[in-house]
Length: 399
Image (tube, rainbow, N blue to C red; front, side, top):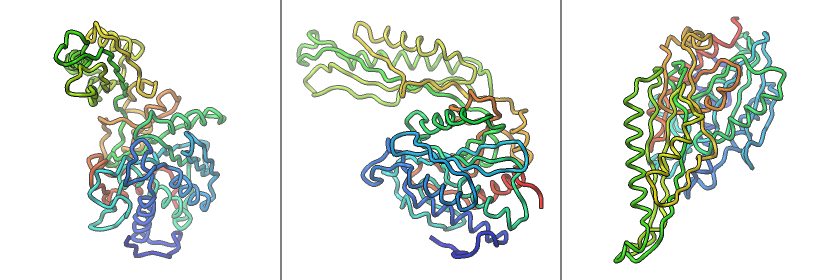
């Protein structure tokens, strides 16, 4: 890790020093393994977000925050850091602590090296950069003779990458214990500093088809679960074609349906008595989720007949799409401070867990989603600087 200001007082840094401080904070966080346990493997070990949650808590306590650790799942705490402002407005910045797995990475996932104007490593762009940006901003406010306008909650949540958003759900429950919900919520993701005001929701379908085993020389004595799965997959593809041919209700686009996993069979000379299929249904904003699952279940059962099939929701939940008007106040504010045109996204975020809150909601952060989840992950430090300028001008009082 390269650092030109190692040992310097972060409250006494010039512009170049603050830029380096942001990069160094990000390198420190990338060095902390926070791989989502559901994507852990031999290289990562068991993973988990606890070490990063405690590191964020340590930094924020040092800046005077009121810190709460909230165990969203066993051994996996969210961290909530409250900084008092000078107005009665409350802003949440939600940053997911977990990263995707590292087993496919060709780069050192945790070195956090700085080279060529970038910080490298797993989580550098998705999405630890915002943690570094916000913590550095809070460190620098005293030196800049500024304070926070709104009360701010810097929130680190677990389990965004996979597992049904347990951290976001836990935070949403925790918010109900407060006197009032926050006025505005920013969900940190790499958006190239453009405010994202909509994206699709998600429904995962776990499809378990049961047949009957037999010798493969007499297939008529069995019931081939893989053959039934083929009919199911064809029916799901026809449904996807129907979905994408409809006119979209918003700029987010139409719903889609994709089969992404299939497994079945026990031997080459045995008619398979079981086949398991996973299909992902991306939910466009405004789609009627009340009947969506029932319709898909009926479609699968009809295609699999006469074989028995069980269809369940992955993680037990269905997430409606997220969308709010680009004319909303928070989108206008971030557009003005960033100079970037509002947009929509193709991926899902923690915003799906917050759509039931009576609050303004946006997805925003530095870096490009195109760099996320890759064998080599990085973020341009210039992007962190842009994000820092937006947060400083939006959230802090002028000198």
